[in-house]
Amino acid sequence: MELRFKIEVNAAKELIWPYYADPSKRHIWEEDLENLAFNGELRTGTTGTMKLKEMPEMSFTLINIILNESYWDRTNVPGMGSIIFGHDILQEGEKTYIQHTVILDKENPTEEDLNFLCGVFSDVPSSVMKIKKEVEI
Image (cartoon, rainbow, N blue to C red; front, side, top):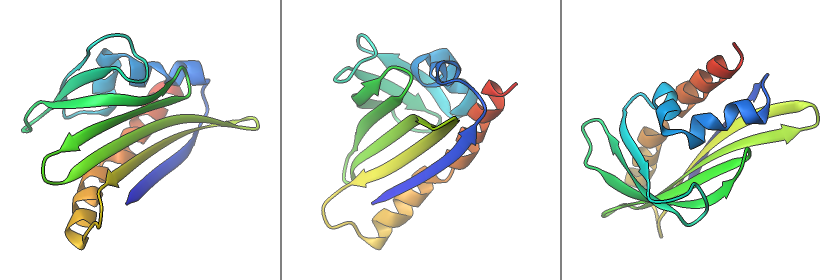
């Protein structure tokens, strides 16, 4: 199961990237983020932990990191499968886009799983709009 949101942004990729790579800037668009820590360099394969408000600390693995282009991570959710979060900065001709993707990686997902995924995804459009607002100033 996959949900995706994409919007055009009037900013260079290099101005957008820090909002994914710099934990201090993540708080700007992930308002429920209390803590984010990487166990090493920001690259594919690095693990880390994050703490969201009213949630236990969770471990994640960076599964696709491309400087100024792509930041993807995977979090295993007990009893639910894996949630994959994709954050892409896309260049299409002269236009730049931010695209966020949320995937539930689980065999035989149910309607309940879809409802869970929709809940996880629900703040994605507003989060992307916060980044857009920040970088287009």
